[in-house]
View 1: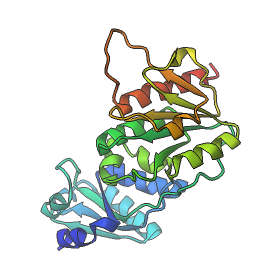
View 2: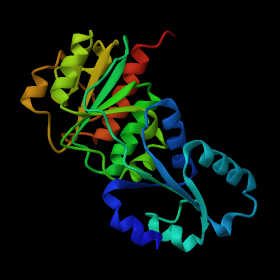
View 3: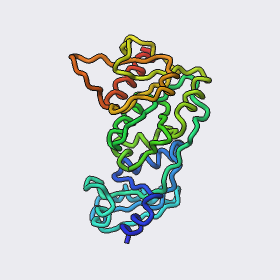
View 4: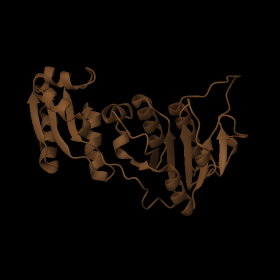
Length: 259
């Protein structure tokens, strides 16, 4: 029954698997980064024993957020989940609504533009890295809305629900940030300057594109600086966007450290 209900409404629902993902949705709602409506949390009947404290936590949250907490046979959870590593807990929510225009940017902030990352696992890895590096928000193109949000959340270790994400016209949002004193830096493997020798001081927008296609001319025309990553050997291929965004985001962290 649950499977048929989800299949019939899947365009309007997301499934989050595992306790880390479930907690991240709660935390995102509390922070104001996540505006999801939680419909229900399902807990495996086979895992009730020894998990009384966790069930108590979920029951308390159900009163706060107004969702149903149901214990069901684990086979029903398996039928909804992408794999078998959910730990006996999944959450079903309505879709998150992403703002299309950035509002009230941080005065000395750090935003990351991610474009062309089509695989939800890689997108999640990129989110995890830039969130850990201290990014204040992520910009993604309107043409590339986040799909498979549950997979993105899990691969990001919950970061995707904890960080501000703006999904709209990229050039418009870049211009808004530049009007607030931000510099716009694009990653380009053919750039004249290496990232570690370039000025990556905040306020800053860092753009990393997918390895299969570069940025449009309308976007690169807005760049104040392009930077590259120096390799340890001659290798003509671009890094994955997830890897490049991790390295570059932590270079930003390093250059803005007070130590």
